[in-house]
Length: 407
Image (cartoon, rainbow, N blue to C red; front, side, top):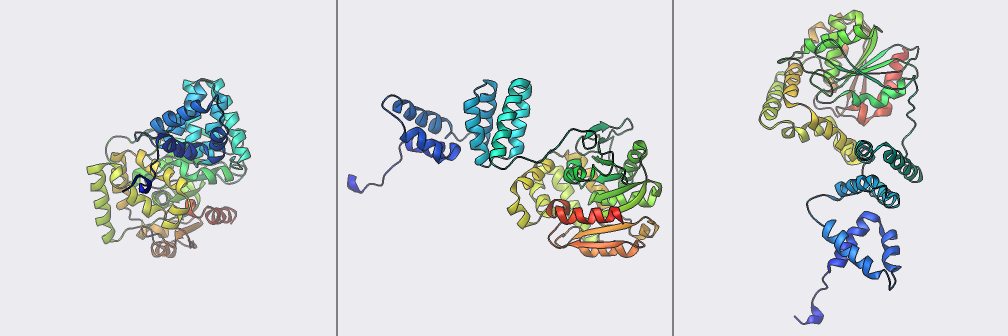
């Protein structure tokens, strides 16, 4: 092959230029390189080859991690012009806002509060310019979240907010998740209702206690929380495992519940499902949460949601990954043994059942069986939801919830 016929090959400058464009954007890079002059051209070439190829091109860290490290380092050195440049590029480049927020919070400890204050002000300005600034979250008494732990054992983490005159509401989360599953609804209800969310034992910030636990233990946990709160009877909202707890609460502690919303849950599993539970439990025992992570994510949210909401899915995956494996095994055993079906006739409070049309674990048929056994119960099937209907269809779920509270 003649020299003229050889395909062009990128040199280190061109490789660095690709990374520089990917991180900072075409407009900035064009201004820096095309606008170079006889005095700074060598400098621009140097940083393009060395910083953007030799360093940013190394395989040890992905670009998102490097972006966040740069934010922390420029924040610590008060290099605010460069911080703003890289922060804007990170936002435009799709770095999740929660990761940027966590980086700045970490910087408040290691770089100092004044540096963090400046970094937050700059970042808020960028988010406002980009139309990405989250809505208000004032720390006023009517909506501020208060986080406590119970004195009773095992200690459970509780989040309280709201001082409205409406009926008190308690939210109970799904297996492997935590009270943050309900953040959006809790904030929306807080102006009108006192709201309590909590982590089940062995989940989130709650203790586990010694040894295995049963569904009855989880039910008794909910009852003691409500009694310690002193606001009962409450409107109890439970999803998945939380819905199983809600059934048991209304059956075994009816004085604690004024009304009941049971979402994406069941009163009993068919025999065929027990094999699936046994397989999941063994997988976690053998390989920890990573062994079931993708299986659970796929069961909790459907494919279209996973495609459309990658940040929410990543947050879901991260919460599940943090779950203590042994506590998860105990919770799986408790959930697999649920058997309220023949006692549902004892539930006397107004009850609404919510199912997801795409839910393979707590099917609409299971929801219908529950509805038929609870006097006066109503059923709503959300067409575009699988298991985490509150995440997949937040508006529809919220509408059902508000109508149920006002009924």
